[in-house]
Amino acid sequence: EHGQAEDWLGGGPYGGASHAQSSNLDIQHCSFSDNESGYLGGGVWFGSRRGCDAPEEGRRIVVMDSEFAENHAAGGGGAVNINASRLHEEDTTSVQIERTSFNGNTSGSGGGAVRVYRSCCPPGPPWICPGECLPVSMDIANCEFVGNESTDSHGGAASINVYSDLDLTVSDTTFDANVADSHGGAVHIDHESSVSARFTDSTFVDNYSMAHGGVFYVYLHGGVFPVDDTLD
Image 1 (cartoon, rainbow, N blue to C red):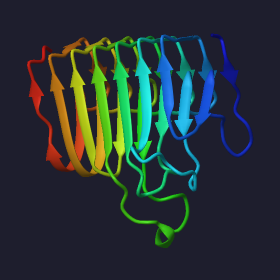
Image 2: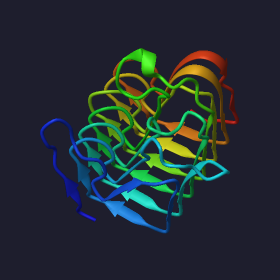
Image 3: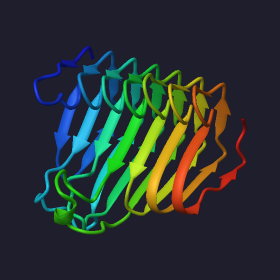
């Protein structure tokens, strides 16, 4: 509670309360409130260095039975920022968020509450790109996103920018009064590869975008985006 990570010359810090560089991340029965980051992840930032061996089952990020309230990031991920960009291209990554509330979190860039980013290429010239990377799976169930805001960008509740195959499932989750200055009042998905995204038994109320997509903004190069048994 009340953690703060200030900006510094040449780039900002990661994670106002928790900064994790590891193979796996497991957060259960935790509360993060009033934390602030000068760059990414107002509450929690997760990433991994290239060259760090992954478990055989792949890398797992688990957040369960927790709450994130009034956290802020000057960059992306007001509550949680997951950056898989530096992982091996052969690594798989799974993100599981269950029975967790995100209330009143803000970010200056994508994802007022949650931002997930994965690019297979490290910064630098395109010819050093290691190649295609394996899929990302993401499961959000029985969660609550209320009053989160991306003040200068997209995804009032969540922004997902994954440039490998993505399998996204959202179920029994409420998105209420989330706001984005750009695209996707509730959820923003920007994807360059194949995607399967399914929303079921979820509720969307009073979400707002100042540009496109009051609820969803989805930019896909291929894949499906079914929405079942969902209330607006």
